[in-house]
Image (cartoon, rainbow, N blue to C red):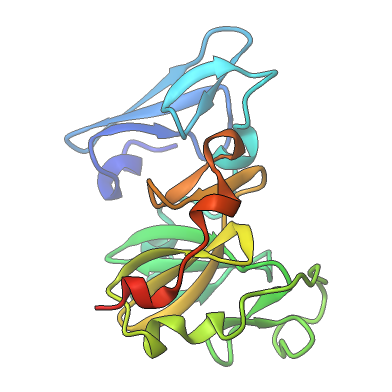
Length: 210
């Protein structure tokens, strides 16, 4: 991690992109790397060092590896969606030089021809990976357009570990990191113990429409 790592990040504590046993503190653009105590690892959900044996943390902090927080800026990528260089089931969202890595919902792969996650059986730009197909909410891939939903995140009624992001009027189906589920109350991926999927997800998209 170089001294310019925090240039695209806000002030505060952030996970290290390559190791679970360190974390980064950004202060006014300055980058400071700290070590967790022996036996602890950094958990990006609670933003603290916790017991490395019991916490779900390494799969969270390494999601963007080898794509770092500077990937969009270093490669000169424009704002919008781009293919992940190693994983067909993931894609990159670039926003003003910032890099965000997301996963397609189960059964989908990112297709660069349409710049969207599509069924793995019809993905034309990714033929070397297989995704597990699971039932999905009918018409989920167009809910933002059909219900005219405001920009933001919404749950997937059929899958606790995925969610919908409405961006510029378009629908993007995204998957939480392994072991996490989408929390309707906080509108973020959370530990499964904090998510009551069956009760919270009984809703109609029309209730969110603008």
